[in-house]
Length: 270
Ligand SMILES: Nc1ncnc2c1ncn2[C@@H]1O[C@H](COP(=O)(O)OP(=O)(O)O)[C@@H](O)[C@H]1O
Ligand SMILES: [Mg+2]
Image (cartoon, rainbow, N blue to C red):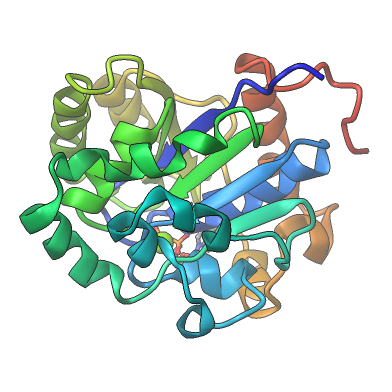
């Protein structure tokens, strides 16, 4: 059996509410539907991804990202929960304690930005894809995600005139992290809540293309199904696979799988 070439995709933008968690959840579900083995790492103290796809409450989990980051690598198997609400998707839970973990890392870790990368090294070759959901800040948790990642997606809220606010700070951080992770590759900006007919969306699209450089051709529309799927703790695929928004996440998964050589396409779902 050939070893998998694991890709680690950080989904980052310190702007809150721009669609990071929604992207991680639905991209992971669609990639798993294609037959790929997927792990989600929830690095956000608010643990929204864990509340959505985890079967347990983060407070019931002995080893979340918070404990993993501060412990020895031996704890890694305890951190990976394979029984989640998304078929084929495993989860390392986030938890409120991650806020404190960030402070402790700063004070005690020899290389504070590289703890996650060290801790998940044994997973290279095990999963096809690891998706990291980042917190809404540009502090150590996000730098850990960027240092551990091979690839980066930047969700941008297209329907808001403030969608690009602060993106230059994120890009500066990416450049800094490239000193310790030179191979970090930008997959592109992903427009969320996009509507081609709206002027604001056109402006944000042009600005994202110019400032971020790479723009994914798939764009995610606004849909009330997104909130419905969170309430039902399902992916959009499971809630309504024929909906436009589910279809766009499917296209996104296929595009990424193709561009990153993740599959030969033989297992693609209908
Ligand atoms: N395409 C969309 N259509 C409608 N609502 C969306 C869409 N994407 C995200 N949302 C909603 O916007 C809010 C923020 O999204 P979320 O993915 O949690 O952002 P972040 O993780 O960046 O904070 C959530 O309530 C989510 O359900
Ligand atoms: Mg989030």
